Image 1 (cartoon, rainbow, N blue to C red):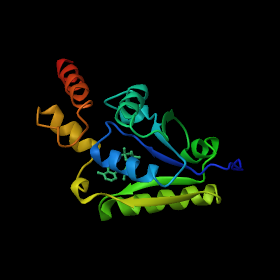
Image 2 (cartoon, protein in one colour; image 1 turned 135 degrees about the horizontal axis):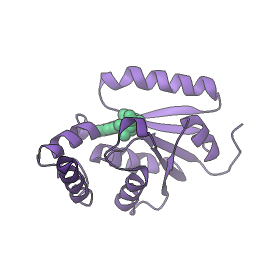
Image 3 (tube, protein in one colour; image 1 turned 30 degrees about the vertical axis):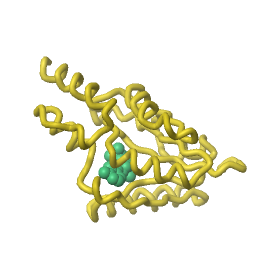
Length: 169
Ligand code: ADP
């Protein structure tokens, strides 16, 4: 059961490996719809992330410090369990292209079936970021391409450094 709370809380879950301007845009827009928005950083070691969950949490905290009602936490396990523990009823997800749709619909319906009190809302991407994904950023950065237009300035040197270390291996 979802705990009753007077606050309207939304949860925006994802990998955010690393956070991009596309994610940040969804965070800014959805934070205006709730009293509190919790960004949930999925711990998924099977995916071999570029950054640890704690690193991703710190990065997102840094770039959302201008948004007082945004909190950032990592979680593992089922998203629905994390959302329930946060006392929220709404999952926020971003939609870019039609290719996102099938997976997102499947996840939303699965989560709603597992927890009928819970709904997923979708925000369409800002056109400026419609093509943008974390994996594209990782790839461009790995080959020393310019990434300033994809991720917040604070995050750029962290990605550069991590790619440098990766190549040394
Ligand atoms: P996941 O591994 O859960 O897909 P991501 O970090 O890739 O995590 O994405 C988290 C959410 O943000 C997803 O709903 C995804 O569709 C959305 N998203 C990713 N990039 C963008 C973007 N450029 N514009 C809008 N939404 C985006």
